[in-house]
Length: 195
Image (cartoon, rainbow, N blue to C red; front, side, top):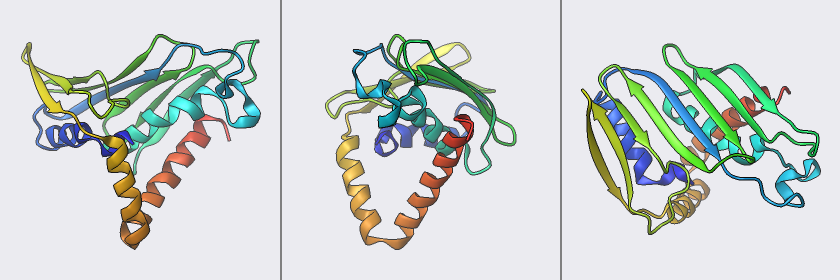
Protein backbone atom coordinates (compact mmCIF):
# COMPACT_ATOMS: atom_id res chain seq x y z
CA UNK A 1 0.00 0.00 0.00
CA UNK A 2 2.98 2.31 0.55
CA UNK A 3 3.29 2.47 -3.26
CA UNK A 4 0.09 4.51 -3.36
CA UNK A 5 1.11 7.12 -0.79
CA UNK A 6 1.90 10.54 -2.25
CA UNK A 7 5.18 10.48 -0.30
CA UNK A 8 6.63 7.97 -2.77
CA UNK A 9 5.38 9.97 -5.75
CA UNK A 10 7.11 13.08 -4.37
CA UNK A 11 10.36 11.18 -3.80
CA UNK A 12 10.27 9.79 -7.35
CA UNK A 13 9.71 13.31 -8.72
CA UNK A 14 12.78 14.54 -6.81
CA UNK A 15 14.86 11.69 -8.24
CA UNK A 16 13.59 12.22 -11.79
CA UNK A 17 14.15 15.99 -11.56
CA UNK A 18 17.76 15.31 -10.46
CA UNK A 19 17.33 17.42 -7.33
CA UNK A 20 19.87 15.17 -5.60
CA UNK A 21 21.87 14.60 -8.77
CA UNK A 22 22.65 11.14 -10.07
CA UNK A 23 21.56 8.41 -7.71
CA UNK A 24 24.50 6.44 -6.26
CA UNK A 25 23.18 4.35 -3.38
CA UNK A 26 19.88 3.41 -1.77
CA UNK A 27 19.52 2.08 1.77
CA UNK A 28 16.25 0.82 3.14
CA UNK A 29 15.33 -0.83 6.44
CA UNK A 30 12.08 -2.27 7.67
CA UNK A 31 11.75 -4.21 10.89
CA UNK A 32 10.04 -4.46 14.22
CA UNK A 33 10.53 -6.07 17.65
CA UNK A 34 9.87 -9.75 18.30
CA UNK A 35 6.28 -10.61 19.08
CA UNK A 36 5.03 -13.52 21.17
CA UNK A 37 6.38 -16.90 20.05
CA UNK A 38 2.91 -18.13 19.00
CA UNK A 39 2.49 -15.28 16.47
CA UNK A 40 1.76 -16.58 12.95
CA UNK A 41 4.88 -14.82 11.67
CA UNK A 42 7.01 -17.47 13.37
CA UNK A 43 5.15 -20.44 11.87
CA UNK A 44 6.70 -21.78 8.67
CA UNK A 45 3.48 -23.64 7.74
CA UNK A 46 1.60 -20.33 7.75
CA UNK A 47 4.12 -18.57 5.49
CA UNK A 48 6.06 -17.03 8.36
CA UNK A 49 9.51 -15.55 8.27
CA UNK A 50 11.01 -12.09 8.02
CA UNK A 51 11.53 -12.26 4.25
CA UNK A 52 7.87 -12.97 3.55
CA UNK A 53 6.53 -10.70 6.27
CA UNK A 54 8.65 -7.55 6.06
CA UNK A 55 11.34 -8.22 3.43
CA UNK A 56 8.89 -7.93 0.55
CA UNK A 57 8.34 -4.24 1.28
CA UNK A 58 11.88 -3.01 0.63
CA UNK A 59 12.30 -5.45 -2.28
CA UNK A 60 9.18 -4.03 -3.92
CA UNK A 61 10.33 -0.49 -3.22
CA UNK A 62 13.69 -1.16 -4.89
CA UNK A 63 11.87 -2.56 -7.91
CA UNK A 64 9.82 0.64 -8.04
CA UNK A 65 12.88 2.89 -7.76
CA UNK A 66 15.42 0.93 -9.83
CA UNK A 67 13.22 -0.72 -12.44
CA UNK A 68 13.17 -3.97 -14.37
CA UNK A 69 16.96 -4.37 -14.63
CA UNK A 70 17.17 -4.84 -10.87
CA UNK A 71 19.09 -7.94 -9.81
CA UNK A 72 20.09 -9.59 -6.55
CA UNK A 73 23.84 -9.43 -5.92
CA UNK A 74 23.98 -10.91 -2.42
CA UNK A 75 21.50 -12.00 0.20
CA UNK A 76 21.48 -13.61 3.61
CA UNK A 77 18.66 -14.82 5.84
CA UNK A 78 19.36 -15.35 9.55
CA UNK A 79 17.85 -18.01 11.82
CA UNK A 80 18.02 -18.83 15.51
CA UNK A 81 17.38 -22.21 17.10
CA UNK A 82 14.10 -21.20 18.71
CA UNK A 83 12.27 -20.75 15.35
CA UNK A 84 12.16 -22.58 12.03
CA UNK A 85 11.80 -19.32 10.06
CA UNK A 86 14.22 -16.54 9.23
CA UNK A 87 14.12 -13.70 11.77
CA UNK A 88 16.06 -11.09 9.82
CA UNK A 89 17.97 -10.64 6.62
CA UNK A 90 19.81 -8.36 4.26
CA UNK A 91 20.04 -8.07 0.50
CA UNK A 92 22.22 -6.12 -1.90
CA UNK A 93 20.61 -5.34 -5.24
CA UNK A 94 21.71 -3.33 -8.24
CA UNK A 95 20.75 -2.16 -11.68
CA UNK A 96 23.20 -0.73 -14.19
CA UNK A 97 24.76 1.92 -11.97
CA UNK A 98 22.99 2.06 -8.59
CA UNK A 99 23.40 -0.25 -5.61
CA UNK A 100 20.67 -0.81 -3.03
CA UNK A 101 21.21 -2.25 0.43
CA UNK A 102 18.14 -3.45 2.28
CA UNK A 103 17.68 -4.92 5.73
CA UNK A 104 14.57 -6.35 7.33
CA UNK A 105 13.66 -8.22 10.45
CA UNK A 106 11.09 -9.22 13.01
CA UNK A 107 13.53 -9.40 15.91
CA UNK A 108 14.81 -5.81 15.63
CA UNK A 109 14.18 -2.37 17.01
CA UNK A 110 11.44 -0.72 14.92
CA UNK A 111 12.79 0.93 11.80
CA UNK A 112 11.01 1.99 8.64
CA UNK A 113 13.23 4.23 6.56
CA UNK A 114 14.58 4.99 3.14
CA UNK A 115 17.77 6.85 2.29
CA UNK A 116 18.67 7.85 -1.26
CA UNK A 117 22.18 9.19 -1.81
CA UNK A 118 22.97 11.14 -4.94
CA UNK A 119 26.07 12.99 -6.07
CA UNK A 120 24.45 16.35 -5.19
CA UNK A 121 22.43 15.48 -2.10
CA UNK A 122 20.46 12.85 -0.29
CA UNK A 123 16.96 12.09 0.98
CA UNK A 124 16.04 10.60 4.34
CA UNK A 125 12.46 9.35 4.61
CA UNK A 126 11.82 7.96 8.11
CA UNK A 127 8.31 6.56 7.60
CA UNK A 128 8.32 5.13 4.09
CA UNK A 129 6.10 2.06 4.57
CA UNK A 130 3.74 2.65 7.47
CA UNK A 131 2.35 6.18 7.48
CA UNK A 132 -1.23 6.00 8.84
CA UNK A 133 -3.88 8.16 7.11
CA UNK A 134 -3.73 11.02 9.63
CA UNK A 135 0.08 11.09 9.87
CA UNK A 136 1.71 14.29 8.57
CA UNK A 137 4.53 12.85 6.46
CA UNK A 138 7.79 14.74 6.13
CA UNK A 139 11.21 13.79 4.86
CA UNK A 140 14.54 15.56 4.58
CA UNK A 141 16.63 16.57 1.60
CA UNK A 142 20.22 17.40 2.46
CA UNK A 143 22.25 19.31 -0.12
CA UNK A 144 25.66 20.92 0.48
CA UNK A 145 25.25 20.29 4.20
CA UNK A 146 21.91 22.10 4.44
CA UNK A 147 18.76 20.20 5.38
CA UNK A 148 15.34 21.06 4.00
CA UNK A 149 12.22 19.46 5.42
CA UNK A 150 9.80 18.43 2.70
CA UNK A 151 6.23 18.42 3.97
CA UNK A 152 4.12 15.88 2.15
CA UNK A 153 1.14 15.96 4.48
CA UNK A 154 -1.29 13.19 5.22
CA UNK A 155 -2.55 10.67 2.69
CA UNK A 156 -4.58 7.48 2.96
CA UNK A 157 -2.48 4.81 1.27
CA UNK A 158 -5.09 2.19 2.19
CA UNK A 159 -7.89 4.06 0.45
CA UNK A 160 -5.60 4.77 -2.52
CA UNK A 161 -4.76 1.06 -2.73
CA UNK A 162 -8.44 0.12 -2.81
CA UNK A 163 -8.93 2.57 -5.68
CA UNK A 164 -5.95 1.04 -7.46
CA UNK A 165 -7.42 -2.44 -6.97
CA UNK A 166 -10.69 -1.17 -8.47
CA UNK A 167 -8.74 0.19 -11.45
CA UNK A 168 -7.00 -3.18 -11.85
CA UNK A 169 -10.39 -4.86 -12.10
CA UNK A 170 -11.68 -2.40 -14.69
CA UNK A 171 -8.60 -1.65 -16.80
CA UNK A 172 -6.68 -4.45 -18.53
CA UNK A 173 -3.51 -2.37 -18.91
CA UNK A 174 -3.41 -1.35 -15.25
CA UNK A 175 -4.06 -4.97 -14.20
CA UNK A 176 -1.40 -6.38 -16.55
CA UNK A 177 1.19 -3.81 -15.44
CA UNK A 178 0.49 -4.64 -11.80
CA UNK A 179 0.72 -8.35 -12.50
CA UNK A 180 4.16 -7.94 -14.11
CA UNK A 181 5.47 -6.06 -11.07
CA UNK A 182 4.03 -8.66 -8.68
CA UNK A 183 5.60 -11.46 -10.72
CA UNK A 184 8.98 -9.70 -10.74
CA UNK A 185 8.80 -9.07 -6.99
CA UNK A 186 7.93 -12.71 -6.41
CA UNK A 187 10.91 -13.81 -8.51
CA UNK A 188 13.27 -11.58 -6.50
CA UNK A 189 11.88 -12.92 -3.20
CA UNK A 190 12.41 -16.49 -4.44
CA UNK A 191 16.04 -15.72 -5.30
CA UNK A 192 16.63 -14.31 -1.81
CA UNK A 193 14.91 -17.37 -0.34
CA UNK A 194 17.28 -19.64 -2.28
CA UNK A 195 14.56 -21.13 -4.48
